[in-house]
Picture (cartoon, rainbow, N blue to C red):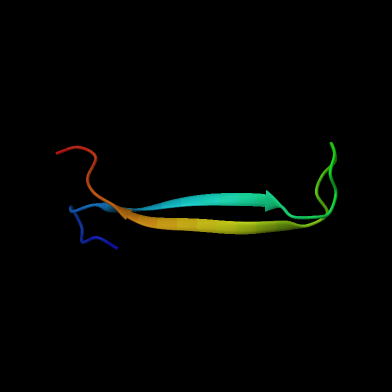
Length: 44
């Protein structure tokens, strides 16, 4: 994690249906992922 004032920690959640069903129905199983990446300041 960047020090205060030097950047931020960007966290992006992702939910993927992983069941063996192909079609227009809810997936029977899901996988939840969270990507985290340190980023620099957007504004100077």
